[in-house]
Length: 364
Image (tube, rainbow, N blue to C red; front, side, top):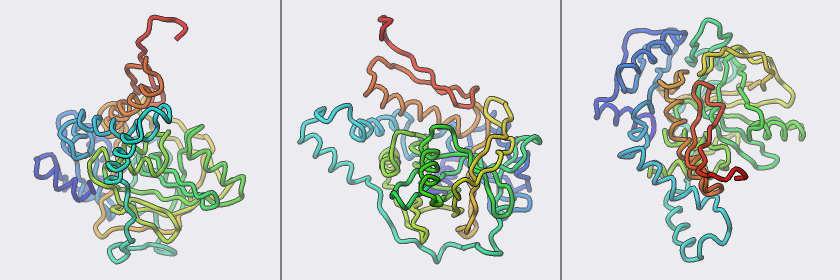
């Protein structure tokens, strides 16, 4: 579902709470969202954000992930995912007979991502003197945070010289009008792509997408899938084919987006990451992280920016990780049948995965 589709679906089911009082993205929106999540499972739309033009939407997945993904229940989402996970990465090439494989490929074709022409007439382009990242609301959860944070945007990184693209979800800090810092975990696919760009002496093209279709967020957390496989899984779990569009910078982004920042990472250009709040309550920073130099902002008319808050349990990120661990489990069971459960630790900022294994043999 697009952001517009989500708002309509939540409104029709009485799950949308619009807040018309003016609120600040510094502290007020995060605090109010977490407090309201203690009593309501509604999506929250902040219509008046202090000093900013776009509206802010949060709590999209919290306690209603099945609604956001066009399903009757979370179990239905997992059942949909199970149909494609084993096909994307089967345990061995002889697992399935040819007839079964052909039938599966025919079925998958219904959800293979489309490429649609970019509709520039509906998009406002900000560049040059008009480009100002501070117009986009980013959140501060704590007075100790050094920069406003885009907490869970989609990051699409493209290296033209090897024709490789990665899509993931990572935090971005807004440093000034034209500069951002990208949080890059160690040994992640995007880190390897940045290193490859550095070896080749080529800039890495980056799109920071704010307000994409809901179905792309769970697959974006799955590190073992390729860019196309993530788009395919997004279509399967929501039973709605996900369309992409090719921007002039040769970057493919979801066709229905609210705001996208286009920029690049120049090899070797790093700065110490500002302090940020994590789900476990730690406020950390100082590690060198790559700088994104913004080139342009593509913005829908009257755009809505989507963010999760930072909280170990009462947030969209926590809800997404609960779904992601179940999809992880599908893949692990293909590889390691003795694994019967996986859990991400929210109090460890979702950095640790605990596996439950069904075996009495110590050597296993």
